[in-house]
Length: 178
Image (cartoon, rainbow, N blue to C red):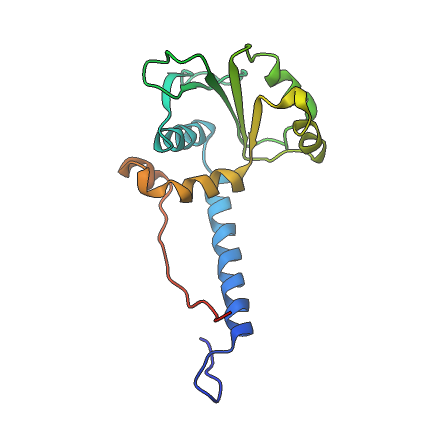
């Protein structure tokens, strides 16, 4: 529903405004969709993403596991023979992760472990400061936006089952000339 200007060109500022509105609304719908998922469904999506990124899941927490520090163990190679492993914790439907949550997760990491903490509730502001310090260099924090960005970047590598769990449709939109 864009109007044409006298010269037959679309008004760039109007295109940008409509594009921003569409992007914001799309993100709201995606965010709501993900927040409505059960914790196990979010864990499955994270596992799907890890596989699309060419990682190998060597252990997945049982479905009945409600709480704990590690939801999956991931390796760069299929046998898990390389020394570094990634311990993944997925937090869903909760408050933002605090510094105490990061410290607790760090306590389970071994000398050769790397940690991925995914939180759909995000992280407190203090966490960003803490994670930039050397003592937390072994932990990567992933909020919902970072998860989604990685999902999009790896979408072509996702299995069809994974795509059906988070069904997306690519649309093309006129980009204003710069």
